[in-house]
Amino acid sequence: MGADIKALRTRIKSVDSTLHLTKAMGFVASSKIRRATESMNRSREYSKAVSTIVDQLVSSPECRKSPYIKGNSGHTTKLVVIAGDRGLAGGYNANVFRLVRQYPDAEIVAIGKRACDRFGGGFITSEHFTVEDGFQLSRELCMEFMNNEFSRLGIVYTRSISVMTQQADIMWILPLEKKEGQKAAGTIFEPDELTILNTAIPEYVNGKLIGCIRESFCAEVLARRMAMDSAGKNAQIMIDDLQLQYNRARQGAITQEITEIVAGSGES
Image (cartoon, rainbow, N blue to C red; front, side, top):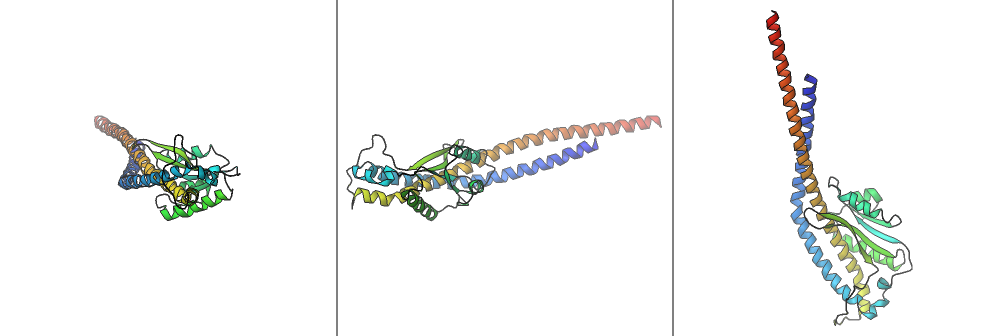
């Protein structure tokens, strides 16, 4: 009986330590949510503004000559895979990697520690990925596309649908496609539409890239907050159950001791 009580006490202390850890990580995630959400919203606005201009240019007949629209003779898919810098975020990273498995022959550019651990190389952090990092990567990707090193570019990221829902998704960036129903605007571009489009594409790719990274990070902290809340609740339930078992074990031990004492008194 004494051994059972000691084992229960040890398990309660262990689960209680886990509870404190999940609470601490939940607080850290909560403190990042507001900043991450604001950053995500700003990047969405920037991406939307750049996309509006590019959509107008893509609708121009002159721009159909651009290799960014016609595509190239390559046959390789390149994916920029954005995963988390840490674990303990529920299915956040697993959902991203599950989506990537649908493209087994794709070349990977990893962003985030978990993605780098999985695919090698890349950028070790997604939280601190800067606009300058984005410009560097975007220029490299555009140059590789122009050199026929790959024929299709996509970004695997996680959409932040709501506080409760995050979804891994893929956004295809290159080659550009004219949106259905999109008409050429009456805007006059100097020196000409084709030159402006080809010059603007690295900025466009960077806008999409930064937007996906900021959205993925926001989804990550939301997923971690939910995962830690769930883990904390489960740990508290386990502690309550163990505490009940512990109290019963102690009560049984005390009752046994009293019984032995009474029995001993009767014999004397």
